[in-house]
Image (cartoon, rainbow, N blue to C red; front, top):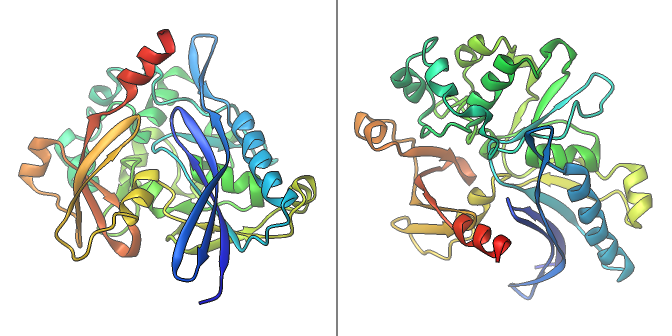
Length: 313
């Protein structure tokens, strides 16, 4: 097997990393090139992610690889789920992406269910109900008047937004879309009926792509800035949990996992979605995995409490 070197950009809700991964002699070696904080910014009473600061830290990590004259074969990006940015017709972002910790979605699901009942939303998506799911964030933005959909060219989830900054290409990666409560797990496409109360046409979302698809090469200006060539950026499993589960060192299909970060996620990998009455009552979720698999799991409070304690201490 030919030796290869790839860059993994892994963004979590409290920190990010640019990782150099080398496949040598059948083994994988990893080195963190740059680790940096990810902090929620409060502006005028609203909570945002500073995507431009994250992008600058990503470029710093890529520049570290360039300065060592390492031949990079590809770049991939994964992030936390549900959050997104809106893109103007001129290609710029409408604003910083809202953070899912923003309380603007409190009570919003109940208002949305006046249009489409709770049971029907679960039947169409198989996603557990959390008030910050993208579906409810978009509805909250409509209620507060903070989204002018006519002035939006596209809506990009976080890993796709970073890939867009790197390549200028817009995609909607399957595993990150699956966290939004907008996707039908059977068709792997956005369920247009759910968009009707939002007054958002499905065309505002780019085409859905599966993990492994090449999005495009580094933009010429970005490549020149960081000292790299036009390296391909690949749509990996864009949801960080999907990438984590893909790396579980299990032999065979019968295994469970606990992926622990700001959130902990416990579940199994299934060949098909499990959208049953019992799953609905237990509020389990069906999120997309690699190779057409489903991650049937439950969100659990993870290290957020410890992170907040450390922040105070």
